[in-house]
Length: 235
Image (cartoon, rainbow, N blue to C red; front, side, top):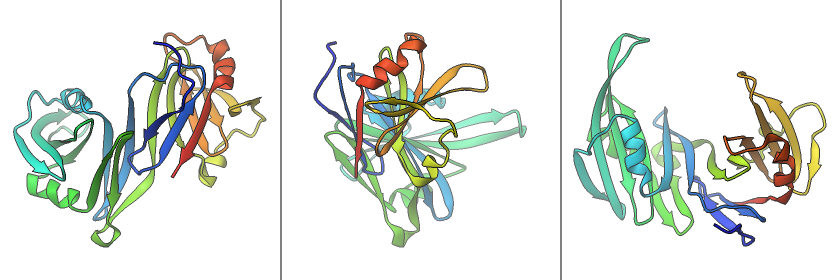
């Protein structure tokens, strides 16, 4: 597919929008992950295009959903999965849930929970489907809040896997002590994972971007490709 110059917008699950532009291929789908604290417990939600529900459910061991309900303008599907955790030597009972809208969906899982428990969690959230993604708005009065800013994960051919998040003061303090490479997209840092493989961090004006090279990435070309990238976050 031809590279896109017009901005491509992806909405994170907390409502923030990330705008990507430049002569790169942004045609691949994206996902977003958010961590929520609901009634004192941590819950992770993963959103993406509508087909992601089946893909993630299968990865979690679901062969078919058991129950379907109409919920907040979409379909809420649930399935129960039991797996053995060798580390703690116990069976784990999980309720896997997927909410499907017209274009987007999200998936989450609860341990040792019933459908009633799931609905109690979801009642603290307002689900909103937009043309550029899915967002949830927690109700603070019901004991629900966003634990950390949501991220957007996006694969860009040739460049790698991008993990985008707002550049908060906390993240800025995590930047390497050495000076990075100046690009038109921002300051680019190169570092090494624990397995010895390289990765990059781009500190744009308002966005933190982790770049993980993939099989089609020529690592030495990453700075040149990043220089073509424009990224912006909008609340």
